[in-house]
Length: 200
Image 1 (tube, rainbow, N blue to C red):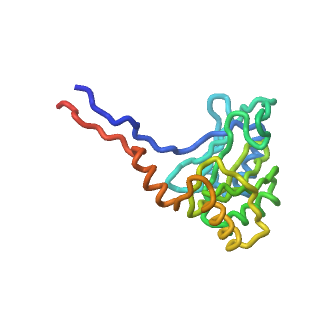
Image 2 (cartoon, rainbow, N blue to C red):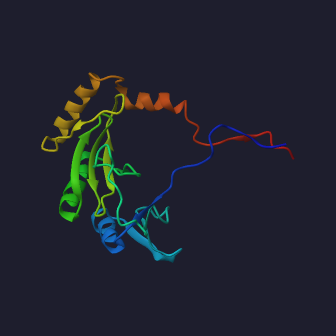
């Protein structure tokens, strides 16, 4: 008798690969600016490959591999975002971390910096040296219906940003504390697939 499973497979997102043109320049950006460590490098399937991670539990979180076509068209809706991969996002711990990465990007080769307030998160978007759109974000304590976007004013203090965002969220569609939203949406998610009825 076949195993009976739930509707969701047992999976968790792990890592992603980026096709690149100048692998040395990209390695420098991801290691020196974003703080990734090179865990391995080599050649396979006609590509030069560099494996990068910030967590010893993960051999690689980002893979850089040569083979990017010389010309890729821009996103037809908004050139900030990629033509295929819209964005690659990195979660951060605090507004102080977000200010730090803003400075590192500014001095370390990031381009097209765009600070944004999504209500549920404060973000900085930037391009890496080959134009891939990166997002660095900090979760807030509030949920509002997405998409939602206004400029993030980093000239304000952390307290001012938090107070402004809280007031903004309280007056926006779908507002609720983020913890309440998480509890509610968790009921629709299956983090692990369960099997039952396996014949012996």
